[in-house]
Length: 139
Image 1: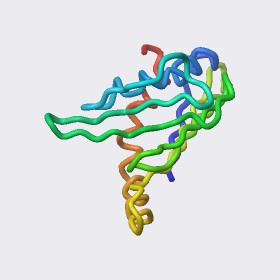
Image 2: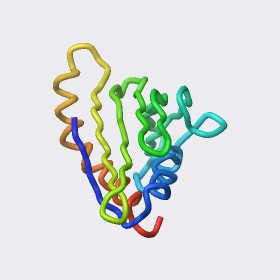
Image 3: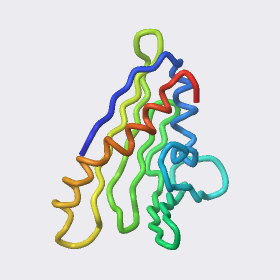
């Protein structure tokens, strides 16, 4: 499991609107796109993040498990890449604080412990860019 925490000059409601736009999070992740259910995110809403390089592709399917606007959401990964992610938005020093906690692993029997350690190492590198973009003054 890893946690990324960032402070932002944005008011909590504006930061929430950014973190609630789940389908847009891949804009800063190379080789990824998002395929999503119609409608707005909320409990039960599903989306898939597709990573592709030429003919090779990997789909990471997720479902929203908790939605407490404008404070917190939690998603569960439901494909070969398993795990969960939770985002919390709180007021902080005239702006806001974003806390992104995630745990991921390959959902292959016997590999959870090893691949979870890899996720803990690589997750901050991949998701750090997403979090930095979300909290920046410019989208």
